[in-house]
Length: 111
Image (cartoon, rainbow, N blue to C red; front, side):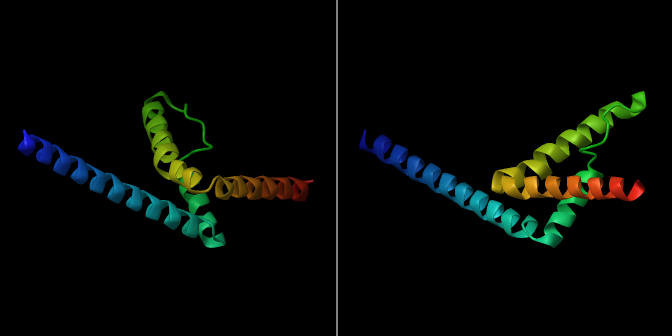
């Protein structure tokens, strides 16, 4: 019986180590995202990635492109946008504000 108990304790310790390491890696990644995309250069790169991913594009164009458009859109939302919002929602909101201001200025210049 004590062997089973010791085995379970070892497994629990090992599982806890794995959880702690995964938590550490996740926290480090989120810290890197904050540091990278919190800069002006990072925001420009992030905006570029979102535009390339078609986050603001229509999903439905030609019938043959619908599945591709949706897949790319979903990938970008989950794998590019998601981590940035998780790391620091304010970064994303500031990018949206900057884009809105740029659009307003372009509209005013056209008038």
